[in-house]
Image 1 (cartoon, one colour):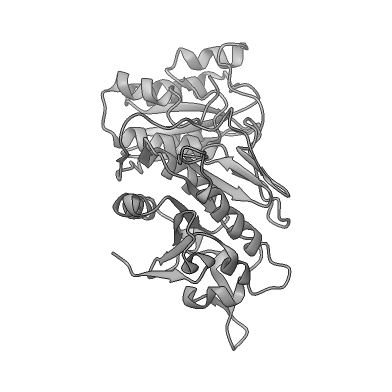
Image 2 (cartoon, one colour):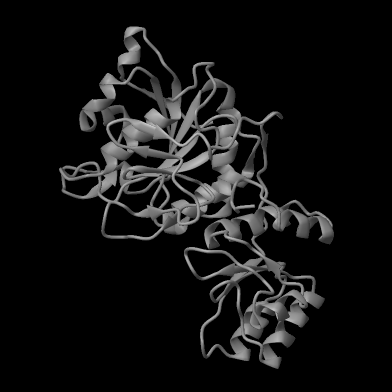
Length: 355
């Protein structure tokens, strides 16, 4: 296990509301300027100097940093498995977890961890920043402090207020399987178009208890295997048979996200349907996901989507591409029978689709 460092907070005076583990994986949120004026991962032993607000928190905060911080553009399924394993190994020692992560692929990681952490009864809050903590106009402090507050929040009976994987950014806490990065230049970088926020952070934290997932009745089960034999095929006017055939014909491919138009529509040219038939014959699972940020796939509503049903394409409802590709990796990694795989792909596993 990697070393764990305690951050100096008011909890050291004896009043502890919760114990939170911060998992630093990399990203702008954990960067600060060194003496040469270069951005470098900050030493969390000195984090209280950069974030004096931490000294007022009535919680125990510990930090576990990966030995080699990951640029989020380089995150892999092995990194997701490592994050899940760390949470599994330290699950009984902490009341909640905050994962500091780069913003570019944070929605993918939050989705992946949602599937890997089955029957989660504690908060796992992803957060990051657009501006390094060493800058005056940074968003790192607010995002980090609020994520800690949410991870520590409890009901009167002591149970967690948000017992699921989530993503906090700017003022909103979003479900991990619903978040999508939509902005690279402003602080409101993430949205969840098909589900309201779990929490709105203003003067107070406004919890939307009606949509927060309930406490599980079974013990935590942590998965660590994901199948990388997947692809994303985004349709566009003018796409050719050569391109579609090349993607669906990848050796060893087991699943593909088909990004379609509108409510799940796709071309009806004979060559396109032949490509889908060939994929079906090879046992490739194809999941239909809309390119639209809002709305849902309704296969069969139009003629241009009815033909997909006959070729074994599965409807993805209102799932995001980030949640869909990680779900495909997760379900295929379970190595179930084809009927069971289809059932899982079309089921609501972690709040990723609206039933």
